[in-house]
Each structure stands twice: as structure tokens, then as C-alpha cells.
Length: 293
Image 1 (spheres, rainbow, N blue to C red):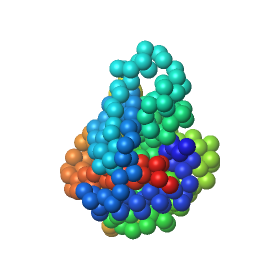
Image 2: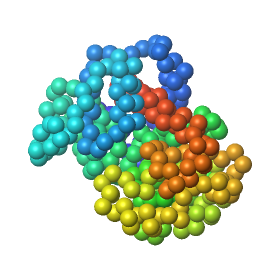
Image 3: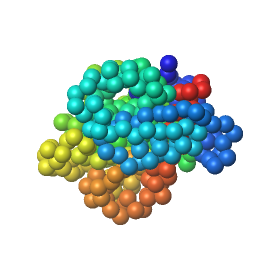
Image 4: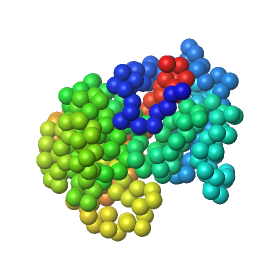
């Protein structure tokens, strides 16, 4: 039984296969030669709100021939305290797979499972980001990615593991309270630097990347977070230090004039919304990989 729970535990050859198939599926959209999810029903279990993840997976399952059940955790017995392992055992007898968006990295091993975001990792997003970069700039191998903001949350953690798998440089710029642990960096075995200096991270980078400063579940920390992170915005000054053809990405939703300047966001909106669209194509490749490979 196959799962996609973490970039850390995803083999390099599987990453490369998913990225290659995403390009093919994007070109074939509306005219797929096979429907690998035909006669299958998948469940989506979301404890966290979503726009891009929910829509892209719902459309993706449909376009690959399957049906999908959306289950809000508060509307099923999970919301009343049923153990996750019991929910998984029941679903394993009724559906063909599960797409989970929740807080803790949980075990749904009774059925093929896709991590659609947890507090620990966001693998679907980072696979999409890499696909988008390579679609526009070629192989990410040997390039430099610079991440700005909360460097200890799920998005940069997935970037950390991806850096080691695909052999690119990752520079994380964050204040001390928002830096990934030394143990995590060492565990990844990637070419990774962590700095409090945004200019150092931006220098000669091929991709400038940021994410929201107040993630879901962190709303009570909003005032403190915004104060500590205010020096880590990406803007035209950041871009001036990067490589001339550097891309700018944001996984959305974006809070303009916080983590990214309003005018700078609009200047790079085409790339950012291509990135958002590509969630559909990459996640279709993930679904196909789980059921076919």
C-alpha cells in the first residue's frame, strides 16, 4: 500500500516521476488516455480550511475518473473524539484512498493516504513549487532557493527535505525564534543555510519564496509574529539582490504588505497564479502514482 505523507520519505526517483507525469497530465488535460481512478471513491478529511487544496483535489479526482467524498472533521465522529485509527479502519473498508488536511501528522495506514497539509509538512505544495520552477526555468538541480519568514513551519520543512533529495541550495532567512532546528537541518543532509540576514539569503538566488506569517492555528500569536517577522518581507529590494531571472513565488493566501509587498506581488502575479493552478496537475500525478506505480 502506497502513501504520500512526507517529502522526507519520498524517494528521489518517485519525485522525478511525479514531476514528469504532472507535465504530461497538464498537456493532456481534457483528453486523458486513461482514467486511473475509474470506479474508485476517495475521501477528503479536512480539519483545516482550504481553497486551493480542496478545489484542486476535487477537480483532480473527477478528471481521473473517480468520485470524492468531502468530510469535514467536525461533521464526522472525529469531531466527537473517535480515535483516528478507528476512523481509518472503517474508511479502509469503504473507500479507495484518503486525502487528509489536519494538524498532527497522523496514521491512516489502513488506506492509501495523501498528506494535503499538516503542521509538520506540506508535500503537495512543494512538489508543485518545484514543478512550476522547472516548467519556467529548467532543472532545479544546482539552483538556489531562498525562503523568507517563518522558517520552522510546514512549507520550509518540506523545502528542506526537497533540497536534499534534488540537490539544490536552500537559504532560509528567519528571526531566531522562527528558524528550523539544527537537528532537522542535519537530518536532512541538504545544502542548507539559515540566517537572520534577508540580504544574505536573497543574494544570487534563483527563486524567492515566502508564505503567510500567521498560519492556521497560530492566530493567538498574530501580534507577536507580525512584530518579529516584519523585517523579512520580500519586495523589489529583495529581488534586486537575486539572480536577474529569479522567480518569485507565494503558496497563497497572500497578505499584501506583510510577507510580500502589494506592488511586488502584482508584478509577479502570473507566476504565483501559475503556481496555484499547478496544484491540480501535480496532485493528479500524485494520485496516479499512488494507484498505478
